Length: 358
Image (cartoon, rainbow, N blue to C red; front, side):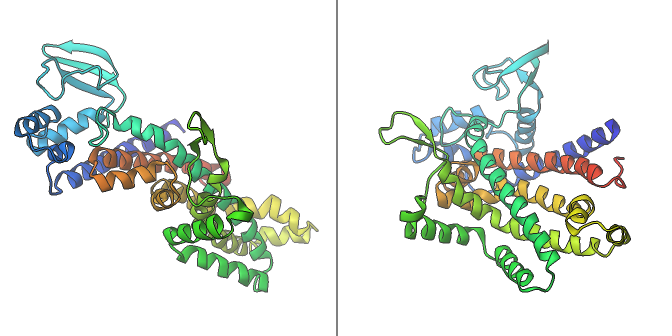
């Protein structure tokens, strides 16, 4: 088990290193000067030169890449010279000094995702920490809806194969997979938040935390979670239905299911004790992938519903060319993908004893 986890962590670090490299190169070969993006409409050449020096934009691309890796690394090296980019600024880094050799200090710190271009003095990690929990709540709610309803409808569809009930569920799942999330978001917001507002009491837009009518305190608005969670969960719900149905139909033809029926077990006992657990393997794969992708796929849903999450923050960062926020958000999403994939491999071993952790 320990060797398996260490092996997975090693490959996860390699994958993350590749993601970091691609992200850095992608956003640093784009046209435009990051220093000018930070200054906006100001054209002060002296201030522009100072910004380039402060953030290392005046250095070659290879040096900037080394600076970026140094910022992200938990163990990093910093100069004592205030004129250097790597100068150990306590306001920028929250670090613990390990040792110092000559003019270089080695420290242990949290990965530094740099500062936002548009939110002066605010670290990207702070921006993400303020918005990621809202996206996490939305993603968990959406995937919970997809799991519970999807598994139930998948079982019903398999039990009533070729029945009108099965065909109706298949039509629903096909529509769920084919309709884009942004279109569903617009449709749900308009229909349930505007047309049926008198009956549903739901709003077209709104986030989890909002100021009260007097602007004095923040209140939790759980009702604002309903529509975006349903919209975000429609596509994984459709996938879970299809996978659960097809997996159960395949398992129903296995010899041990026939043996269970021959022993006189009811269909409910067969499904609960034998079929469902074995049918969950492909469903777990789909759920893990969809949960991680929801952190990225929530972009349009959050923006349309006005949900103050990481997805909405990414859209705002794209509109303002806030590259550090975009790069930091993509890295966090990639890290979530990697962690979930490792977690899913462990779940496989629990669901299927034939799967060995190697």
